[in-house]
Length: 344
Image 1 (cartoon, rainbow, N blue to C red):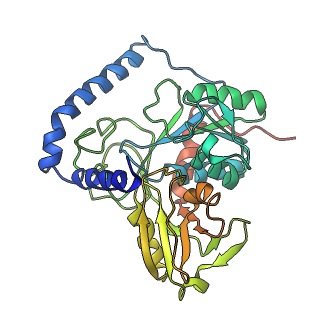
Image 2: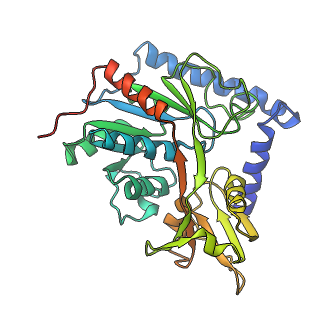
Image 3: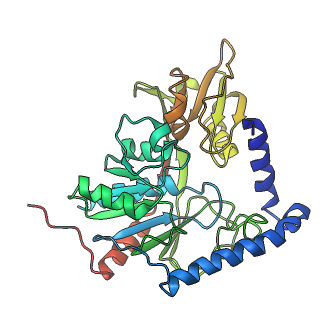
């Protein structure tokens, strides 16, 4: 499927998931089948017909119950940086969505994003901690521990529904969509029924009132762009110097419009916007900007786009998480008997 057609299909589904309209109702019977299969899988793990693997260190899973990005990767980054500041030595595991490889492998800072995925590569560069990818997160965790025995806490980027990995703390991430129309895929955005037990809830944008209520501590973070864009060589360009520059903004993320809106709120003039499917590889993208237009993208997209357009500018997304959220996370780790090791 061509990128434009795929992006339009994703946009149409996303719009359909905001209400229980004709398209959502037409897909509702399929959501019953999806829900039955998901319930059966959960039951198999609950009754231990299928066994979850427990690793010899605390595991924190950051995920969501809605399809598409809600801020899992920025939350994973924030959690890893907090843990490191507290004296932990964290590692990160991820599936590596969209990569062309299928093995378990560690992510090097100079890795090809086609081999490890754009988000794991971004996490490796931004967090500065070991990262491994693998479809089976437990296998990725074992490989990471074998290569880095100093790691004493594991953060799983996505994987709330990956029940094969036992976890100690679950963090559910939501954005402004909340739970949408409240129906399961494909009639709605839910990967599993909500509410469901989790330890902490973090909203990266304020969701509709009452949509994510449940007996778990909930916190709201603030998303904003950094005050600078990055060149491929790592040098920074202050956003204020771009306010008079005609820009073509491109985004291959779950919600491209959210990125475009943030750019406009920063005072940037967007001559054109290009919305692409999430995790787009840019291999077949041949769009050229005008002679006086500069290409600007998300930091995640830059992991792949810079191979083709090293002149593109990438704007990092910064997530400001309340201190109370991190305090609650520390309390849950301590309640399970986990504490940072005392360093010599």
